[in-house]
Length: 114
Image 1: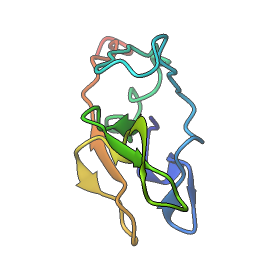
Image 2: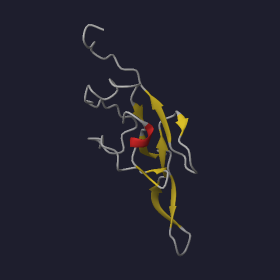
Image 3: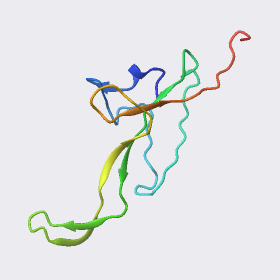
Image 4: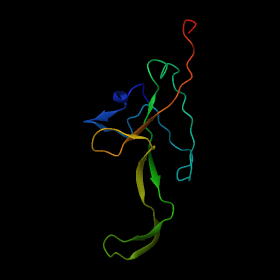
């Protein structure tokens, strides 16, 4: 979360997962759904415009499939799971990447009787 697109962590125009200032690690790894609320400084988004949010996650397909031995290609009897990374749905960042962002509305305190 930042007050402008250029403040979202990036390298050569690509957003950098894991370098965001707000992080969440689930208390129960592997659970199917997580909800978390971040406390954000009130000043963020109370200047010019609304805050910009880029949400990145590691996701796992819980369906599973039979694991194969890498040498023999025979089933090992264990269950394997596909994992990927995902971005919160929104507008595309520029550049050749999958990163997306969205804006949020803030209710900011009035200043000087405005």
